[in-house]
Amino acid sequence: MKVVVCIKHVPEPLEPRRLRPESLTMLREGLQGMSGYWDDFALEQALLWQDETPEIEVVVLTMGPPDASDTLKKALAKGATRGILIEAGELEGSDLLATGRTLAAGIEKLGGVDLVLLGQRSLDGSTAMLGPVLAELLGWPLIARGERIIVNAAQRAVYVQREATGRVERLSCNWPAVLTIGRIASPPRLPSFRGIMGTAKKPVETWRLADLGLTPAEVGSEAAHARITAVTPSPPRTPRVLEGTAQDLAQQLAPLLLQER
Amino acid sequence: MDATNLLPGSIWAVMESAGGLPTMRSLELLTAGRQLGMAGRPLVAIGMGLMGIAPRLFGLGADQVIGGDSLASDAVEPKLAVLTQLAQVAMPEVILLENTPAAQELAGRLAVRLNGSLVSDCIAFEAGRLIVHPIFGDLMRATVMPRSWPLIATVRSGAFGPPQDDPERSGDVLEFDVSAANMDSRVSLMQVIERALAFAPIAEARIVVAGGMGLGDPATFQWLEAIATALQGAVGCSRAVVEAGWRPYSEQIGLTGQTIAPSLYLACGIHGASQHLDGIRGSRTIIAINNDPHAPLMKQADVAMVGDAKELLPALLQELRKAN
Image: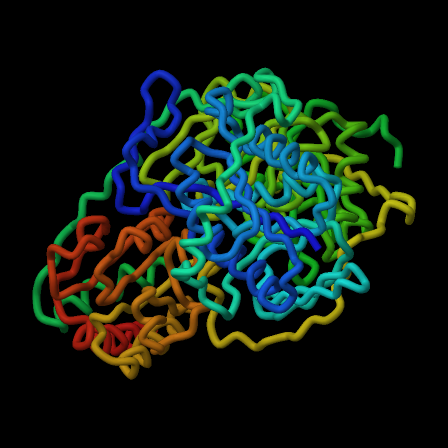
């Protein structure tokens, strides 16, 4: 069984976020990066299956700048089998569809992939739509926001439990499939000492556009259907500061709440 | 279905329904559709269970209502098949959807199938067909120009408000049915376990009242629960509260829990870590109560009340009960 975990290398939440004025893409140089919060759950799920069945191949795939290889190295130290970075200057400015196209090309190049796992949303873009786009490009079914996932290799089937508004749902589908992962019960593991030592033998592979059979016209800002033309700071809130006794404040607060009811 | 009745170049609002009626959030798609600034473009409400309330939807801005039981499925793939089939005939210019998990899948897949532009979480439209959506937890806002049509956009709940009602407006109704072969889903829903909810879910409530470690102990949340009940709102909390085991994860607000955009967010004794702030900026009004006037959340609120939430909450509950 071959599982691909798509990881996004995102800046640490406390790093200041700046944009390149000419391209309105994010300035990532010099920023401390990490894998997204939800991506760590996706990787953990794949590694849990691998703990039980060591033959399971866990490939970690990311599209990002050169220093995204740090995130892949960490995943390898946790136990992933292979780490692949898709990196090219032309990828900058990719929208959801161009990103999906690039990752889909990587998954097709790998070949024989049974399941693709992603975090349920990224920490920066938070669109939660890359999974669906990728599933459609691959022509595979998708089950989103899984919290308990069981695989049945003999039947090539996956069973997923998830929370929805006022209910718990249990769904299933056959492989190959795309799954987005929510908060599974096991907290993401840390790299082990042995794992860290082992990464010397598992170098991060780098794939370029030509390796994927893609042309610059198919990716990046050239291909972006949704082109960002301006980025502005959100309007700031200027707090009205109120002080007083609990009674005073409660009397002022109650009407503010009641008018919204 | 008679394809000649489909309005070309239209703006679609893909409505979701609950209990046989469109959700409030779906009705907001009509407001968004009207504001798109494409004068003369017909607005089409499309979804299951709309036929019976078509006159009301005309009043709320729809020029045409397309309904059919084939959209009744809970599964995404059958809906996708129907919408793709319709869109390939009608060639809508814009397809608006809610920003719910099911609609996100629908939107992503439709954008690939129709080779359109995909934008998530729209909060405004600007002249010249530009779309505004928040990025980085609404620290910034990006203006996006679609370069391929149709535009497929999910719309942030609460950003556009309910549509204005004009009972004089009218429109036409189109019922459709598609062949059963299209209705297969590769994903099967095997079991549903219903769960009674004590409060509205935080991602959907108009009012969210939340507590942080500043409340001192888990028992203080009883005041928040009573206030939420009085306001028909939801109870939320900070990540630290969940980690301390005081409240369930389903109530956690922030990037690592749920992102919320209620009409009013009342934060009591929450310091305001960046991952929490990134999850609340979509709220229309933010009121913070904290002992510490310098807590980050007090700087990002519309109203900052300097005081001890533990004392203020019982007094507030009394005030709310007086008003009822």
